[in-house]
Image (tube, rainbow, N blue to C red; front, side, top):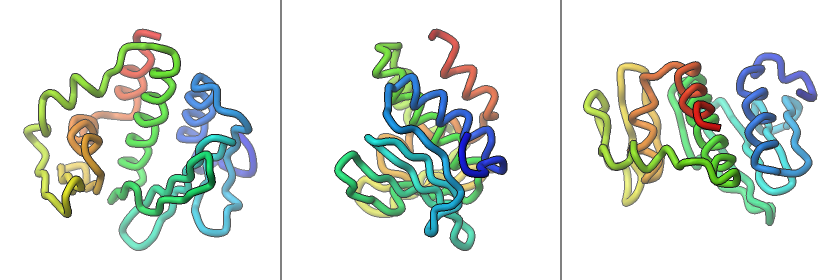
Length: 162
């Protein structure tokens, strides 16, 4: 880890692990970014995780430097962490040609214990006893099955067949 990311230790460790497997270059973690709580950087893709009011927001930056604010929002850090680990691992698993896990969850539709509220075309707020998330599809459907799982359980799912 770099630049004082101790408070984001588990998430930082996951970023370093999965971005390495995805073969991203210039991997870094920084809590010195002026507009976010923590920046997960690479030369190909970066994530700014911001905490504003009641929400944790994910801003993404692509390889051309184009930033997309609020690409995902969460009512708690724990939900943001679960989502980011899932997304990073899914990318790495694709690079590694490992089985794709999201398709099976998406095929089930929204989890039974989650309320799905359309916000705009293609964007859904999912609500569960664990909190709320605002995501685009198909990620809202997939994430509805992860919201109630522990971080350990999600990490085990993602690494089981590597």
